[in-house]
Image 1 (cartoon, rainbow, N blue to C red):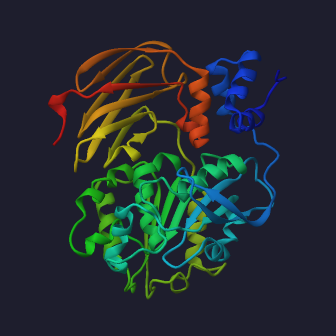
Image 2: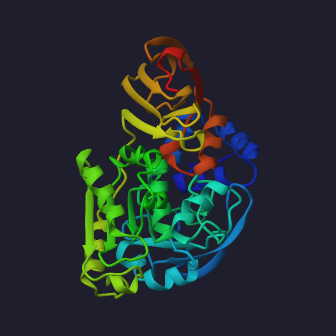
Image 3: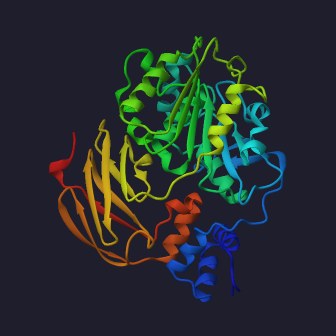
Length: 411
C-alpha cells in the first residue's frame, strides 16, 4: 500500500507500464476517483530532471520514431520547469534548431524540446506544403492532424521531465510555423502560448483563400499568440500572417502580438532572433515568460474539420459531415446542467470530471433536446485519461456520447 503519497509519486505510478497494477494499488490504498484526481492535479514538484543537453528517441502515437534534441535548465525556479516545443523548417533538424535557442531554457525556466520531422504517409500533409515547395514535395514534414512528434514531445515533457502542464509553449519557423499555426488552432487547450515565425495558415493561399483553415481561427481566441515575420521574406510572403493577424484582431483577440521585422528575410539569422542580446529576442523572451495557461473554462467554443481535433477541454464533436466545419458551443450552467449547441457533426462527447460536474444526474441539452445523464466517476477511466496526454486539464472520469439531432446538422 501507498503511505502518504504525494502528487509526484502518484503521477509517476500512473505513468508506469502496469496501469492495472497501479489502479489495484491505488484502490487498495483507499483512493476513489476524487482522491486520485486531487493528486494528479496537484502542483507539488518532483526531484526535477537532470540538467543539460541530450538527444532522445521520441515515439509518436503511430509508433514512428525520431530523434529529439532536449536542453533542460540547471534548476527550477519555485517549482516545475515548463516546456517549449520548437519546430524546424524544411531541411532542418532538431539539434540544429536547439543550437539557436538553447539559452531560452534558462531565461524562461523551460526545457527546450526540438524534434526532427520525418516523412508522413498522409497525402494531405504533403499537399499543405506543395504550394511552397512544389507538387512533388515528399521531404520530412510535420503532420498537421496532431498524430505526430510535436504532441508526442509535449507528452514526453510531462512524463519524462514532469514539466509544468500550464507552462507549455509551441513555436516554429517556416514549415514549423505552419505547424505551429495549425496545431495551435486544433489543440490550443494544451498550450499556454504559440509563436509562429515566418509562416502561414496554409500555403494553398498562394492560389486563393483557404476557407477551411481560416474557419479555425476563432479557436485561437483563448490562446496568446506572438506572430513574427520578416517584411522582406520572399519564400513565405508576410501578407499571409498579416491577414491572419487582422482576422484575429477583428474577432477580438486579447493577447495577440505581431512584429514585422524590417529587412528581415526568411532565415532566422535575418530576423535578429538568434543573437542572445537581440532586442526582439529579449522582447519575445519577456512576453513568453509571463504566459500561463488559465483554468478549465465553464464555456467552450471550438471548431473542427475532423474528429482528430474535435475536442476542446471537456467537450468534443465527432462524425463530422464531409467538407463541413463543425462547431460546438458548450456551457456549464451549473454543476448539474450543461447546454450544448452543435453544427456540422452528428455526435458530441462529454468528458466529465468531478471538480467540474457533480456525480449523479446531469441535465444535458444538445441543440434543445434534453438528456438525463448519470455521472459515475470511474478511477480506471481517470487513470487512462491521464496516461493519454499526461495533462491534468484534460482528465476525465467518464465519457458520455450523445447524438446531435438531425435538424441542426450542416451539410
